[in-house]
Image (cartoon, rainbow, N blue to C red; front, side, top):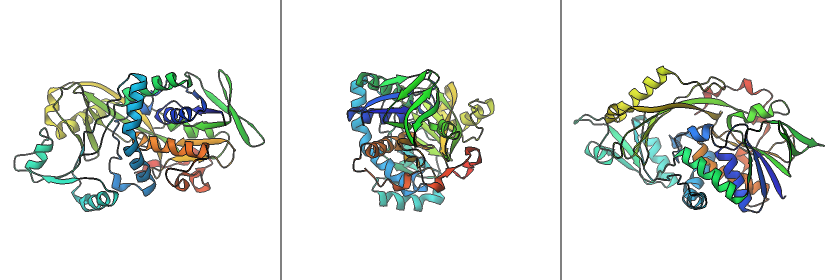
Length: 380
């Protein structure tokens, strides 16, 4: 193999391209919009599943590998691109998980994470800005090793890194169909011409199933909208990632504070609404009351590539040889993305796999004839 075509220039597509390029493979990425400007740009960048004990072992394996290997990879990307993705070990403080605390603690001990169960003054010491009454008996759970990246900066860094490595990124280019012969894919037909390669990787996020469904059975992937807001605050207003009742507060280095996010099932609609803006602002101020003093600078929405079990599809499609998929990461594109890309490259290059590849394969039961039949309300 000496050339690979990747459809999709999100985090998954760009990380896959980076690993292949460093292995000596020529890579061209085809992107229908602009690199990194869909869900990769829109996410919060927490390098952990929000409630990791709720996920299956295949997700945990990818997350742990990514958490271990991200620091070195992000440092290389920073040095080569000149753009700092702002990798920061903020730690993650969980609130309102009393009913799951035993399950969470057992999971954390099994997986080898450091954590602390906190209450009262200890909670206020870890995060002084919390909205707790002086006599509160609330219990929290703190994992200090959890880190974050700043998504817009990460995708900028990745794009610049790839360009300096020699990867071609064809933006504003719509993939229309696959070029194949005798059941073997050898290229992609686009609105700007044909691109040929030894293998084609579909990493189109929420759009992956839409691209495939006209030609072959599709993975169970569909868009799940998430609306978010950011406060123009100051450094020190909040210092830890805080998760409470399904809403998270993420402090950035410059003082801005991100609050997210919703789970909405509206096909490919990315419209933001005033009702959600007010709800998210209210939730942010419940968690960190001082945020009442700062304006909401921006509201936006992204479309996650939702999958029923949260386990991504990584591997060759059973109906077309040399057509591979790396999609369906749902809410965990950043945390499991690095490992999923490495696992796919292991398969492309015939290398020993970093984790058992079987749970991620495109098996018959994980494919459907029509992606519209998918009910993602079963998702975690």
